[in-house]
Image (tube, rainbow, N blue to C red; front, side):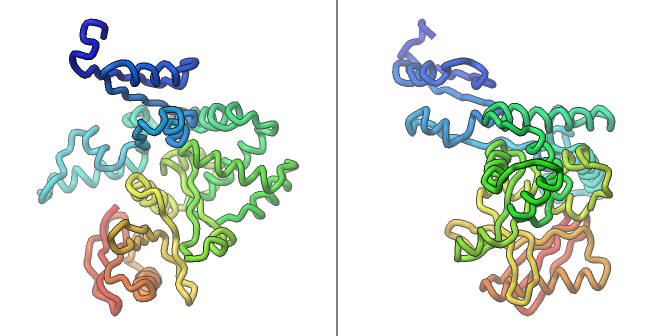
Length: 331
């Protein structure tokens, strides 16, 4: 660095920098006094983008890094999936999806056998809880946090309310007030571990008082942490769709029509029409087809949208409905 000082830009990379004491003034001084670009990475809630922006005094850009998307998983498997797919390549993509469905998008987990994969996921789960929540926030009742996290993971893609979660913890003997439960939920999201999705409503009060839905950062982590209850594969697909959307869009809601139909996701798009997305394993059953298309069609009509999407495991078709067009796509 000294030889090239102010002669040319020097690029500095620091991984897991949150582990170093007083790293903030060191990096801040380097950015002020040297001709350099600094790249920081970390896997801890101590690297929250809002905190980095404060520490770097508005001179930092932050990106969230999620586990592999399915497209990134293609890269790991060295599968070329751009453009038209031959029959052989389509089979390779389908096989890769089945592996992605089972193993998850965590790079260190990809390729591991089932037992080691589950153990690694469990290590991730407890590391996040104790490093990013219990230790960081000096939680006085860590068992309450752990029990709450287990319940939320077991009930991914399901509705909840703070009142119901508080009552659940009380039934286990925990004395966690509603305010503490609200804090736990916020900290889960800060750690990019469990995410809350609210009802889409112009009224913030109504949006906050209605039941919310919870999703995990990785669908296969849900499987590995399952308490033994039969896992709802439809909820796993919904979780996978959520993470695919969340990589690109920080604001995601669910929608409920005037007659009570529910649409899994509505995504506000800056300068563009909103995106409506439904997740459903298969539309093969007539009753399922009717339910999913009716919900999406009604939401499209109420919101003035001409298109909607249903994500399935492997179906691909275009449906013309009264409100417009529904695209059925494979996950």
